[in-house]
Amino acid sequence: MNDDLRVTDCNGSPLNDGDSVTVTKDLKVKRANTTLKRGTLVKSIRLTTNPSEVECNTKQVRGLVLRTEFLKKA
Image (cartoon, rainbow, N blue to C red; front, side, top):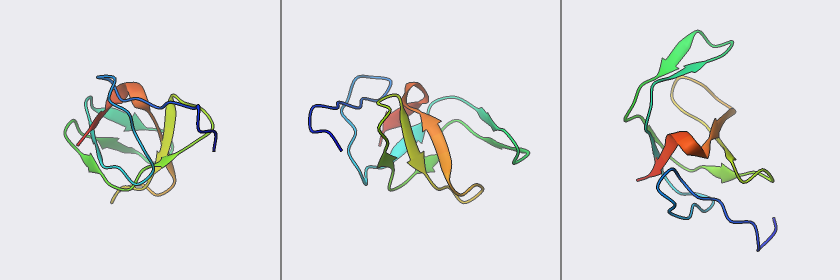
């Protein structure tokens, strides 16, 4: 991973591998027929090469990619 790659949440706080984040908006998950509710805690995120996306797992969905504009650092 590039050291100059800066990933931030919706408030501009920097995100790192292993951080916990909170979902700031109800998100419909395609192909899983479920919705992540606002306030859902997501633990142990993984950064991707795209600074606007992170990979994570939730209780409902495994291998999920979320946009950082809908996440807030917990």
